[in-house]
Image (cartoon, rainbow, N blue to C red):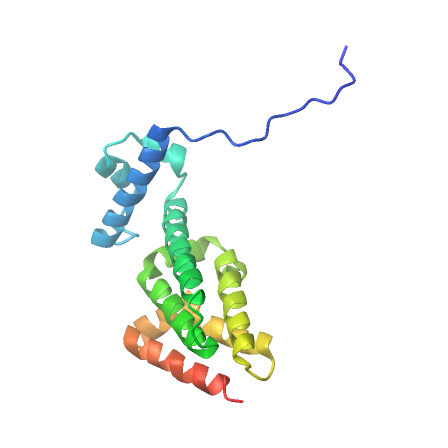
Length: 197
């Protein structure tokens, strides 16, 4: 016979063991070094486990496939971008300067992480709906609003975020052969034109 009281489940996450956390960090550092040296596509999950000196089981307990490794590396970099942005916004620079600064920071983030983004892009059908993209969009829109930019801010923000999208920047860098400096200079030009009253 079953009791009438509801079954209470403990849904609090289990604390991560110190050795598991160390392995997680070791795997990410190892993967980043291998990806940098050989390219993401050339590195296998077995390569990561072997270079880290752990068994495949340990690797697969942390990451079930290479996309998850890339996603974890991107997450770390995105958190760094967010921290830099919050620190910058606390300095109370002119809002339009912040628009330019933030767009350049996002472009740099994308260009530095194109290899990871290529892997994640293939696994995420609507990358523009990814939380990082939404944060970029919200930040740019808020900065333009603070700057007093006239017009349809939602549309103008969409236009800027599309210019910062990994697919766009990859096309400009690889197909067009634009240097990162040319891309950033172009972004600044577009921002100046979009923000004219």
